[in-house]
Image (cartoon, rainbow, N blue to C red; front, side):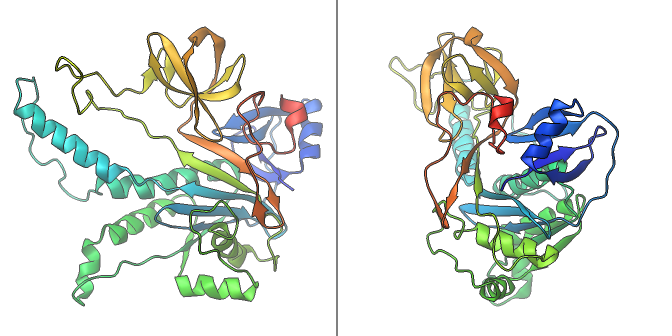
Amino acid sequence: MLFVPVVSSTGKPLMPCHPARARELVRAGKALRRFNKGMFYIRLTQRADGKTQPIGAGIDSGSKREAVTVKSEAHTFINLQLTAVDWVKDAVEVRRNMRRGRRFRNTPCRANRSNRGVGFRLPPSTRARWGWKLRIATWLSKMFPISRFAVEDIKAHSNGGRRWNASFSPLEVGKKWFYKQLEKLAPVDTLQGYETAALRRKHQLAKSKNKLSEIFEAHCVDSWVLANWYTGGHTYPDNKRMLLVTPLRFHRRQLHRLQPEIGGTRKVYGSTRSLGFKRGSLVKHVKYGLVYVGGFLKQRLSLHCLSTGKRLGQSFKPEDCKFLAFNTWRTALLPAINGEVSEPIFGCKNEGIVLVNWNFSSEIR
């Protein structure tokens, strides 16, 4: 059972409610339907600051896939499997090579600037990777009254046997920055990997060795035991449904293509705007329903499927798209069947305006 997040009239997250209760509040005019980057929730119209129960958020970090679980003592509200941001390092290298190439051509370019990284500064790839998890944690904190984060601590293997080597590891520097920023949202507890494994054995849960699979046992099993370590209340997961979240990659400042076209001209490339729409924005198309905006070509938009990211075409008129919300990632809710995951429940057609189907689709289509 999936629950509907509830936010007070002042923006304070409250305890989630049953979908039937949410429908009742909306019909009575006591709540309004709202969306926040793939999450459907209701916002109360009357001032109500009810009591909240302890809610924990477990975070399992990884190199390719990561997981976050939000649960209380009685219910597991949501399981997220995240695709990690791993393209920044290569993108920075390409940008550096393009800048060096422009300096050897008759191309207007700025002069070299002095080092602006004075003081503490995270490398771009480290900042993007850990900042992605922080964005997700901030997003969830606006929907659920999270009272504590339980994070599986990861360590870098320092070379040479010297303890101070760990201070130069991007992994160590990034996680310390992440913990410091995460504490601004709620208190943080860290557990070692062997402690997480002991919790899995305690609940008789197995972890899959296929780290790229879209099943609960791949990563969410760790995030669930971490959250349950704080809240308690369960000996076995009561909700294995997962929401897949994949960040969208934007080419913001790339001036042109790396390779020139026929005639020696370089095609202009890189922007965050497409014919009046911000790229990644959620729009409702007259034929395909809920999609997100990609690039554009010859005054026509490129639209993509929200659940798979597949491009639906490049010849869509802007006037056929209704803007719904800004967005920087795509989502797909997977149903859990006996611990296994089937195909996404979302297709690319007739999706209405349902971002996440919280058993509420009959009311919000």
